[in-house]
Amino acid sequence: MDGGLCAIMGPSGSGKSTLLDALAGRKNPDRITGVITVDGKLQPTNFKCTSGYVQQEDKVYGLLTVKENLYFSAVLRNPKCEAKKTKRRVEEVLEQLRLKEKMDCRVGTEFNRGISGGEKRRLSIAVELVRETSVLFLDEPTTGLDSSTAQVLIEILKKLADSGKTVILSLHQPKFGIYRQFDSLTLVNKGDIVYNGIGGDVALEYFKSLGYDHEQNDNPADYYLDVLLDCKTRQSAHQNEDTSEFLRKNWMQSEQFKKVEEFLTDDYRLAKQSETQVRGKKDGITYATGCCLQMGILCYRTFLNMMRDINASVIQGLVYLFFAIAMGVVYFQVDTSLESGLQNRAGFFFFSCLQVIYVNLGAVEAFLKERRFFQNERTAGWYRVITYFFAKLICEILPTKVLPIICFLPITYFMVGLQKSFGQFLVFEILLNLTTLCAASIVFCVSASVSSFATANTVISIIFIFMVVFGGYLINLNTLFSGLSWLKYLSIFRYCWNGLLVNELSALIFCPSNNTLPAPNNTTDPPFMPATLKLDATRNCTTGQQYLYDLGIPQGSSWALWQNIVALGVIAMILLTLCYIQLRRVSKWT
Image (cartoon, rainbow, N blue to C red):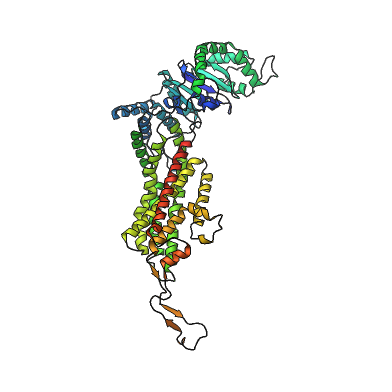
């Protein structure tokens, strides 16, 4: 491909996108053969980080404005430069792609209308151009656009190509107005190249020489597609030969192919000498900026997305507030009577642990949506995995999962009437915050491991259910079959519930509400003459420690409480480490 606007065409499933990915360096080199050269040199291993690549699906942030999307791309992908230079580059690209008037408009989501489909596609191109790259790849950029919008888009790409950039795009069946813009044409059929060279009359004459008639008013793009799909009658001595094999063989024997082969001979010889060395190298992802700058920019972008997402910021806060007040009303001022004191406290703690665990299920869809952005941006060398991970943790998980507990659970705590010691209140907050951090880490880890929302939701639900079942409230863990008893050590619910019970009950005594007992039935003789007998103040009471002992929960020492906090802290660290590992394992290849 000699530069300019280069088109790769062919039927659906012919290998257009695969060829484009291979040329862009986005395919695993261990799974492809051959050598790719750029300007007469071996393709750099970091080529995918220095070139632009626009996928079929627009990957731009709907809650950010057009200008913000470009700004974040410019800052992360260009070497550290002055703010004025970055701003000037963003404005230049906005002007080139005719997006100046829309620069302060939000892109839009499925729930909030934003810019049009054509403008969104131009924004996707602008996000890549702001990198100041000389090579731009586009995978079927006109898909989903009406004919006039597609025409405008190709004209913009043509101007970019005329300015000195190499623009390579795959297309299915463009109209004539688009086709005539191409400087070179590559036709692909069933994984084989059947033509590569100048388009226009040269390509038409080549296929005519193979026996395929072309009517004067036929769109050349339609004509080529008919030839490749065997919809054109071949007037030659090889009519019974398979079309794809016929086209491949004739191309390999054509004069055009020989010219291409001669042109590439020197480059190919050089490439062959270094092929083993190049193929042995790693993926070669390089970064234009340092960790600190990446961290700051990603934190800012994550914070903006979170604050503009009503579901993440406002609705989730209202949900926490609702549950805080609802639980406070239901369990309002629990007493220390034997009839209800223990049961109500145990039930309240059960519901508190359940709430902070299951509220994280709502984050599954958001994590999965952003996973696609992460994979694309990581492959292109926008940022390191570690900076993305900490930005996600600091600016999304902690504010949306931990902060609401800190703000709203004090309402519940004092409405319920739990012990008013500041130390015990602090332990209550720590236990629930660590529990929700563990649950959020599970959601994050599973979402980074699978690509299907249904699969992620099912796996996470099963994990949470097992943790609740083996948490100690629904079944006495002392009665568990020995082969299953080890599962209780994996339950974050168990550590949360046990810790809350030990924190609250250790110093409490629960007595019958009226300190009386009914007389035995049918007893009228002394000493049971009265219908009920008055007891002393402590008789028939039970301590919180006795209740904990009956449940098999360790008590009687400070370690009995702190072991639950330590366990949750260790589990949180392990889960967060697994999250990071899973993010690193997300494929870097398409």
